[in-house]
Image (cartoon, rainbow, N blue to C red):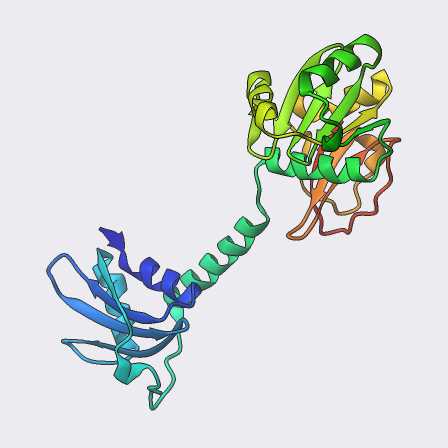
Length: 261
């Protein structure tokens, strides 16, 4: 059983084309003909028109059957346009807003991965290894462990590896990766490697999001960035990493952000 008015509102929000047969627990039905999310006809055993929508709210739960729009209604234009009003309009607008928010909302892991990739693309790489050189991942780690600490390794934009005195953690877009997995993949796929070196304090600052929850979540709204050590700014199109004393960004007032002190 589903909530009938919500199912209708979803179909309208998704701009669906077809015939919805909405049935209550007693087997009574209302038919709604949709074209690109616009209602072109509503009817039931009781009548026809917008008043039938009110019946859906009285019914509450039921089942929904979806059919193709009958051919005779593909170019049909109702004598009077159906206007969605009242509770149905509120439902449609709420679902549209929810869809817009979900477009922007990503997991902390995804945001952090995207922000770090962008940050590294604008940083100077200390070492570059092309996949044409065929240096193995184990060999790379062996070289780093002898002389280089506090580094971040970007691996073909697929993995980001944090290396303190040893491998601290490996991050991918999907989440954390264990050392063995990347070892296995390396047997079949040569990687490009970029190694970025940081001071001990800078490296510690870059690892803060992995250690604790953000101290602030919300819109930027002209906060004082000097109060925070690191942060992620994001919208539907772009994600930026801010690191105190390492880079400068000018976020807009309405940017979404996660900030750590």
